[in-house]
Length: 206
Image (cartoon, rainbow, N blue to C red; front, side, top):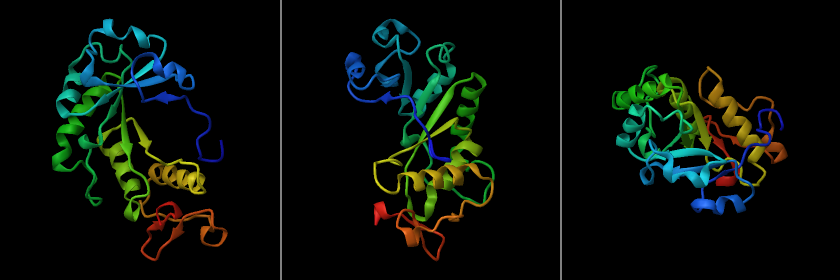
């Protein structure tokens, strides 16, 4: 662990189904497609009895169904939402949910009342650092429990600096405009380079 950079984490397997994941690095959880299983009946989940299950939700209909299940929390209570369910643009001047997102916000509120965890995937290194404002909106306004920063760490020189930038930016309450506090990336070559508009130009995407 280094500052805000995450330390060791459990392995979550998203590849082949059934027992193949046990051969792939000792996964402690597996992502399963909600649409292919009966969450309210565990008789077809025996293969996964020793690992955690994260259910992938693809549609609003599936999300509503989950919110009405009495046993949803008992089956693990962790649900990964498809990006298709989530807004990709927001009005940063508004404190409340956009009109089109009210239905999603209400369903998520019902899930929280049942102690169900929701995870939202978040694209990284977006133009104008839009992932920061989107992440804040998902967490603070919509009430998403956790954010999954996709491809934040890929093994290059931007891994640590970008992870610090994203985590700090999403967590802070001030403006989502990025400020490179204490970092001199333009001179040492290891950090994002700030443009005049406040956007950060990461070397990975240049």
